[in-house]
Image (cartoon, rainbow, N blue to C red; front, side, top):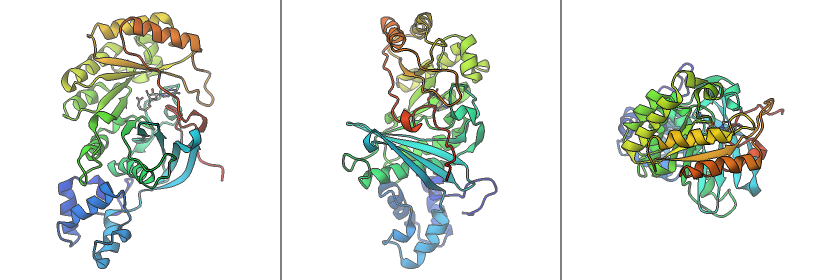
Length: 364
Ligand code: SAH
């Protein structure tokens, strides 16, 4: 593996398929079974420090560490909220691009929100990341390193509540995951592969959230990996949605909903509709009704709606809907028979909630 690729992060063990891992250790002059040893360290023990891999011959360790596990990112800042059960990590990548991930521990489960791109090209005006523009796609290993670090931290008992495992993963950090399709799907494969080939997570506990890139949604439908699909809709009508989610001018609300419905048809996974409630923008009763009608027109039981009060971003004129308006919106959707649950805004006080990730440079 060449350590330097112009403009691209160094190749890392976690970028490779199980077959490529074997080829790569053999190329490095090591026996094929080293691939499984390395995979066990990485995916079962959450270690990438080959100098600590004491079952490898001392002579090989150093060389394997540099070729297989080049340092991809450094945590430069950690912010905590909710008594330490929400932790946002700021990562500096090899080229000083910055991303964030957020770990959230709940009584019954632990969820990691990962970034798939540095910045985002989708330009949704209410989203902090959307204001940054796209810096670049993350590599598979850059996404997996966020996950490994979370497993490691939970195994080390760093989060109050005792040692635990990561149960859920959401692609709701920085970036549009389906605009970085190849790396994201390779990441998903490594997340669900049984240990030691991967992290052994359950596909249903992985959520890929998208603005609605229809061709990529269709591709995901055919992968045969039943991840949960979340569609960031935010408006049921094209006029408003094109303003809130600019890619809507390319693929309309109806086309996007048809594609989401087909995802359910093929995978059996109920789709989540994300809807940030923005005061006097998209929170009208008639819009709840229109959304309910459009969803029901495509059948029953295939979808649920997750409204979330807008997390206001710096400089934005928009704010969250009033509580009564939010309640009315939810009640109307439920009145149409649509399962609806308000999503929590954990981490909003550390700018770690949905749509707030901007990876600001610290002032130090
Ligand atoms: N690009 C993907 C995933 C990243 S954003 C997507 O758009 O789905 C994850 C979720 O947070 C999306 O549903 C997004 O619309 C929502 N979001 C963005 N900004 C927000 C904000 N300011 N308040 C609440 N939710 C927001």
